[in-house]
Image 1 (tube, rainbow, N blue to C red):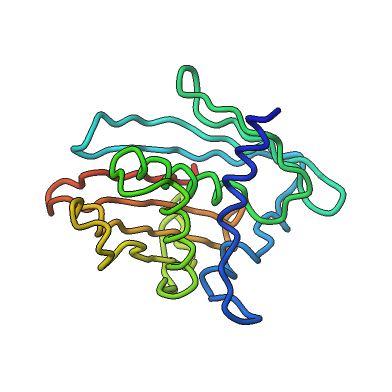
Image 2 (cartoon, one colour; image 1 turned 180 degrees about the horizontal axis):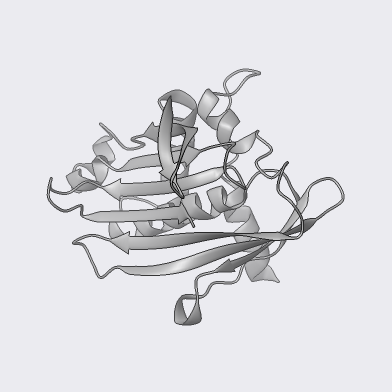
Length: 212
């Protein structure tokens, strides 16, 4: 039980930082949008997760959300990876936002702590929160999904750019997040990625989650 409570606490740490009564467009899209409003129940949403890059061996796996009707929102059960990589997360009851957003962001900051130890994962988390409120850009995009051209919004940001704490890890200073949301896909999330750029030919690390 303590493990589940800790996971909830970690992910809830991404609650946005506000300097006024309103939030940034990026935060509004991520954390104040009912992504599951039009999701039928019962149903499931499947994502493919891939990790690649030169820093260490990559892998491909799956994440599936099983959606059922709640009282004020949707209840979500998460099957996160398979076999030896499987991770357990508590069910989310009466969700409105898509929990895959918080799970993906939390994984990224834990990986950053492991690979670029300039601080605790909470430090990385806080830098992401600040970037989402202060410097993230949002643009309208088109993307191809199952041979259809759909529209959405891409949120992008560099949470550690020009941060002196990363002097010893300059590659990680250029860490880039790209989050693609769309009302035209079930669950509102099409693709999430973060990468440590590395060289032009091969990223040091690239993790991508894409809706199947």
